[in-house]
Length: 333
Image (cartoon, rainbow, N blue to C red; front, side, top):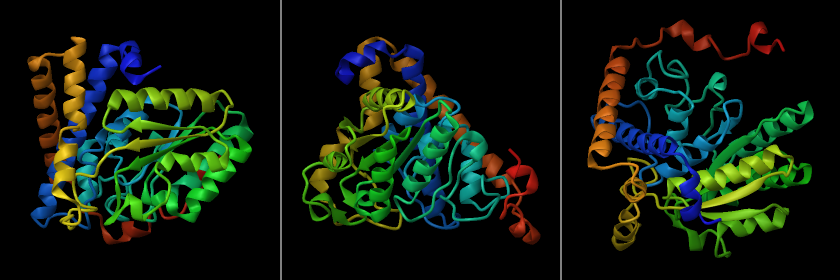
């Protein structure tokens, strides 16, 4: 079934909810970028501008008891799993109310209570972790699935191979996503690999693979649902390549002068928010008034989040030693 046909089976409320999270993700990261340019952010800023549909799509498809192991361009996934804009901004400001309570790098956030595994800077390192979680689910015979993500550059690393191979051999309930955003920092795709599509890597591991329009939130959602159902039923892992474009630099300190301007102009026309608005309008699910209501709601939530973060306290020195090791209470079954 093509995504264009399958979208008709998605409830209006679900599509509007995904549109809301697309707008919330874009607005939140725009505000974080502004704070960075004001010199107020501790550390770097890595946004998902132009790629929001991937994280929003896949995290909308998983169940409440499932686990996600995202990477640094998956802001929408954090928001959908319940990490608030205020907590995110507090994390970037190094405040006590951020997910890591002022510790660790600003984008290295996660919350196991909300089913989010925190990640590290070495891309694709989260894939073996997700595979290990999936192995635990299988051993325990739990009907749970793990979804994890990395960029196209991450698929050239050894830990990507180890995770994919082990998951396929053991038929583990894990879904691997790849944000093919055309560049691994400044290296274009054709200088990274000789294959035409990243999804071709899936064949080497004996798992199904699929190319998805990474700027179409409904297409990502439908593909993710299908892969999650397969994993939950014992069919093993799936690899999904989401084709998209990184519209900002690798980070906000990177001007991305190495990217041809005409390429960016081409991808601007495929903006995931614009695509979602066109879809909602075509289906009769939203008009200009509905879209404006979402925009105003998002603005208020971002302003409230900034206020919360700015009023939050900085951590005290002794707190640096708290939460470093698991307590007896945390390790009890």
